[in-house]
Image 1 (tube, rainbow, N blue to C red):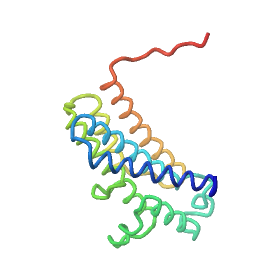
Image 2: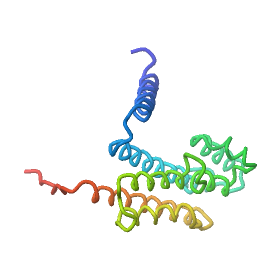
Image 3: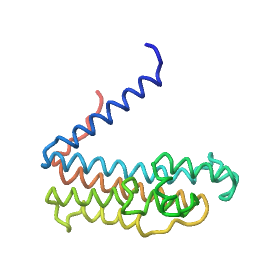
Image 4: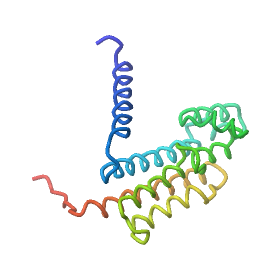
Length: 193
């Protein structure tokens, strides 16, 4: 095997992207398609929140050296690049500071990789699956969407980390409500003999 692990990982990523593209482009727009999209958008929202939360990780220079250090700036640029958000932020004349990162990764309803956009799309897919607005899964999703769109993280690493953890918990609650709504048969855990 020439190229090693990096080549294998690259091939897996390319195949996954191709599979997702072909599936999304060619699948009938029925329940299965909406359910697939629901899962994709919940996963993306969770990823966006986790990426945003790395700003509060004490292992990163942002926390160690302070929010205005050059290392913190490089870290924020890397976060935005990881989400393909740096150039869209610059087109909006935004800066890669804490507010810019929060805006792009969490709040922008018109940026496809923001948590707000992804949760809004998840809501649309649930509606297409004929889930009523008063059902628990829609309420949990509304709470998660409000959290990423409107709540403000506190200053400092501890406040940011708590905010990120709370938003992740909100998204996990949505996922649990989806499980409960769509997967009726709850299988009891078996004990190993």
